[in-house]
Length: 334
Ligand SMILES: NC(=O)c1ccc[n+]([C@@H]2O[C@H](COP(=O)([O-])OP(=O)(O)OC[C@H]3O[C@@H](n4cnc5c(N)ncnc54)[C@H](OP(=O)(O)O)[C@@H]3O)[C@@H](O)[C@H]2O)c1
Image (cartoon, rainbow, N blue to C red):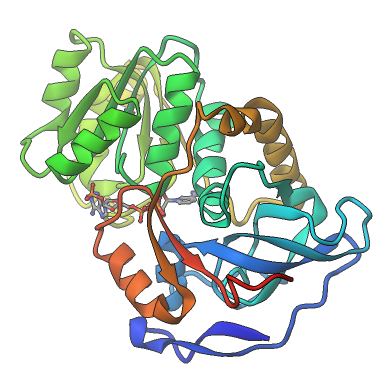
């Protein structure tokens, strides 16, 4: 089959259009003709050789896609059904396999490009807000990298779930205006604000926020702990500024404020865990995509031949929401 292939680990020049073996579905899997796929920070790390696929997964890049079912031995879907889903790898190929229990029927009014923007961003955001955070209706939340794919999903989930105060941080006023339009009640441009903690303190009347959703890591550690309320929870799902807090890491607040700090990734979770998460997300929120209360946020769509430019765009932090790629033969039928 046609595929984006990685010549060797490194820069964008190593992403080439080539051929790869067509995947063969296992007994619990579907074979899907990929129509669109989403880009993720993890793809950049994998391209650079810093994020190998879990054992047993395709070594082609790509963690999410939308497409058309070609084969399903499980009897869950029929040939021609449109699906979207999370894959352990292989979304950059012309075809990919996906566990039938991980494939989500595509809401009718979504395009393939919009549907491919759902799996990673929305399931990561859903995992953060529900199984991980101790989120309660009326809570106040602080979301970092709020204009990212995950951030734009999390803002909307917080809004429909009744969060009272939604503070988002981002790196430009343009992104600030955008996240406000999605539901942030307050925005902080971290490039022009000395301390986001001072803003959080002022916004919350000194109480701090109930939940911090962090994707940045070390450089925000101390301010994050200060920004949390008593019994607050911080969920760490990304480490955009590195993995070690080098000095003066304040851990006193963990004791004095009885803080909960949790981290997680989605990719290395078991098949059962993902199935359960996907089913709960589908049941609770999929219909809100039908009504328009929730919207996949697509910033820019690239053609698969422009995969290098797509990676460059994401890596340059230009996007507000998701970067999507139309796969091979996008305009042709099955
Ligand atoms: N744990 C999981 O299961 C899981 C799953 C998916 C994604 N993630 C993580 O979630 C985060 C968002 O992913 P995504 O694909 O949605 O990202 P994305 O759309 O590529 O957006 C990331 C944004 O983060 C901001 N950023 C980058 N470096 C930064 C830094 N050093 N300090 C502060 N802000 C920085 C930039 O926006 P500004 O212009 O605002 O700076 C950038 O546009 C990433 O950390 C990713 O690894 C985790």
